[in-house]
Amino acid sequence: ESSRPLVWPLIMGLFWKLGLDFILFGKFMVLLFGTCSVILMYLIVSKLFNQKVAFYTTLFMCLSPTFFIFNSVLQTEIPSMFFFLLGLYFFIHKKRSIAGFIFGLAFMVRFFQIFLIIPIILSYSYLVLKGKEKLKPFLIFLSWFLMPFVPYLIFNFYLYKNIFYPFILQSFMTKNTGWIFHQPFLFYFVNLIKENFLVIFSIVGIFA
Image (cartoon, rainbow, N blue to C red):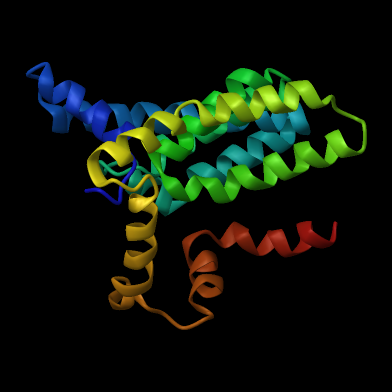
């Protein structure tokens, strides 16, 4: 589909091209990405807070029914989460170049990861403006982030004569093909609690 990024189809296509059972190997890859995501979550939170917080965070993650559901389907949610968390892991360890590249891969697995990546870029740029971080590493970070993205734009121009065509199509689909899933405004608030009752403690966490 022209509205989709290419990394996950390339991974699946590699198994197919090698003559392997790409459904079986694809499910194995999703399970592997999910397992590694749990490990990365623990390591990231241990670095930012402590091991006790990391334990409860990963427990919260593993108790999520949505996490279990997407660990058994060949969609982009779990692989893109893995790449985002891997990028975040390197970012907080100040390995910014490789973090930028992996964030770029996360975006190229699932476009909507950009909504998690943009706050990191803005926070980093804020530290640069305040003089707490240097400009050159920040520009290198952005360059590495764009590295997986630029070939995709060139590929779009070759196929569609418009480098932004997949994004335009994705925007159209978001506005016009999702009405079957339309829900009232309170849907997410209610169903977050239904999915995992521990969410209720986040209200305390916000004030704390």
